[in-house]
Image (cartoon, rainbow, N blue to C red; front, side):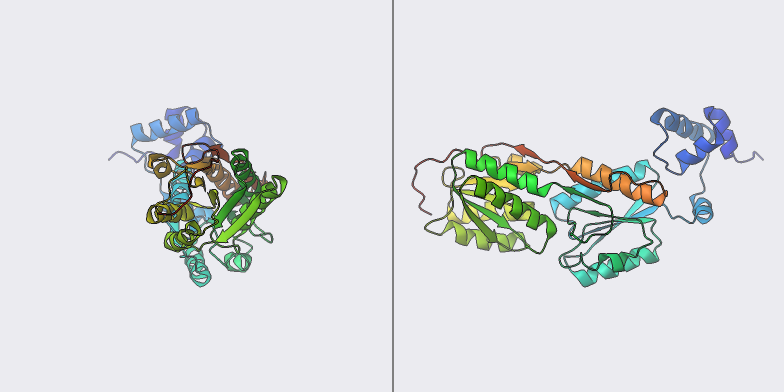
Length: 340
């Protein structure tokens, strides 16, 4: 009866050290691609099966990461989870994704479940009203990275878009087209990222001597549709609308159809968050593109550094966004602004 291949056999076949084999099989991202491929090829040739259960018992790690998000149907969160799952898989980890539905109590319960499942670390996008109690809920001993919605008191490493600069640059662009009355449609001022976007918008409007019109339109696309529909029906409506996230943008597009608004002739539209459906609309929607790939890479790096007890580099990352100009924004012109 042929003996089962061992890690030593894999090391000999791949012509690497036993330590390198161990690192590759345990998902250590510091091993280069060429060495990693040699180890995996040797495993395939020898039909070597790594016993992850035994390895977890020895290391006291489950090689799982918990990802906590408010809503999987939000395209930004869905895209981010996909990127994180790919990074985790490449490092030999699996992910457990839970949603909170913007409910602080549900968020606390979901985090407790992940702790009971003994995840090695967490990547958290806090739900509405949940940032303040996050440290107590997660616990000081749990490797954790907060993403996107980072409160001023956040004690964990964090990654987010530079929201102030992104909103500032987007607003400056609308001002450059001649718009002076610009509305920013935002979900909730209780959220840190929304506060930052409002701050960037208002700073640009002060500098451009424009009329800043901040509208809080709700947390769902339907709430935004109703609120923005009312805005579009105002006699003195703005000539440009800057929507502060993708759900608000969806509500704005629905409201535009309800009210018979022509974009960009009646109102220019600029969206915060860029996704494929914005490019497919006619007119295609100009947008602030958040660097999802970079956010995912930095979030994974920070959680892995904590798990492996390595020095944490760049503990609070603020990533630059990009303005993508399409057909929904145009220079202001003297046309009738009557709502149909």
